[in-house]
Image (tube, rainbow over all chains, first blue to last red):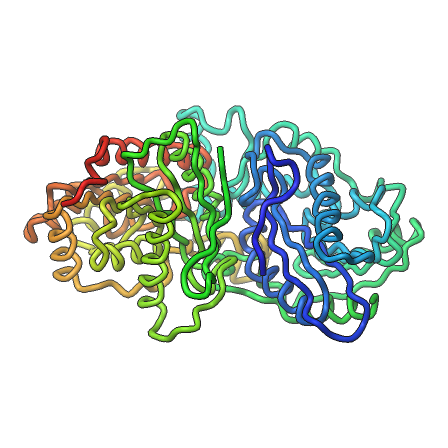
Length: 272
Length: 290
């Protein structure tokens, strides 16, 4: 496991590379596309476990932080979905450069899965497959969900009705200019991009194979039908019984959804 | 802003980010160490450690945020001795790293929840820590605090409405009539988990001893401990009998949750920490030998 900065030296991205352990089979590369905000923090530990398991199985893995997130340069005010798609492409190029692999799979979780789909409209050559783990289908619904979660969390944490907290914040001049959700700023450009995000309107997908992993967010027929219509060989798995990673509990202890990890490992192995 | 990855500790297994602003760097200032909160990796709850690191670096401090053994991007420790012993060992290695990479002979440390606990455990055995920024540290409840809490709540009419609303929502949760994600988000916050508190006598005596050799202590309490601690004077009253008053600063942020989730409370916290650090570490003070 090697942590490093890569990309534009003025605004570098933080990455962690897990080199493949020697074994039979052709080496493959994996780029892990993180979720956003609180979900990224909740997922950090399990994505490390996934990366380590994939590396033990013979894959070169790169997990990284998008610009303005995690340890990468920037903050939430100056990012948008176009930037993050470019970041996935940069991570892909970096992984190929470091490991020498020619076939790469992108595994995206929540908003990271949606970004992987958007970036896969014009991917680098050799995108062997996509794993879309509880993808965010529509940005408007996602923003509404984040609002709901934020209000419920703050209400529970401060032991007050959200309306009272909101009124207090208005008095203090909070939340007037910048949208926020569960500890993270959603700057204007990002908010606008999320408002416009709709995976059902994607018209091109260059990945040959797609696995959709459902959990708390179930796999929808609508998504599978749409991905199929774009020419991808699609499949899905439901791991709703093992979805504890995306909970407050995951802030206090490492929660690893074994069903999902086992399914992803098996599928990636079959794509080699 | 210059950020670079450092690896240190046993087998170079600990991973951290050293942040400096070369144009602002003031060699007379101590370094700043930022600790994990629970199992959250080194960016901190709500990326607070990244924001702290960059803001402190802009004010001249070299800053190291890192993962304890087995957390985030650091490898698990090979040596035995239990988590608490290992954490103290890791923090010692981080202080060595700050000295080696940034020339800091002394440091201040900031940590939330278990991060505060680890700072305390390290400070009593490592005299290089000269300022302790403890966010939601150990709480020693008093009956007066609980009475004060109940009285404050009873005086607010909207509380009675909140109470009725919460009971209704709890009933809906029980009956399964509410969205699962909304119910999940209302689980008790992180700080409600059990923390093993040292006996007050030991805690206070150790902090008093540290204050006696010039170590500055800041305790920040949030709404998460409002039932048990809700006024700065309560903290002073608790520690005064042990000789701890000078060198102790206390702030109660009853409008903030344990993780400082709202952006405005993050900014308020960071500004407060910068002010405290500037006050307790004026050129050379915290960096000087006791």
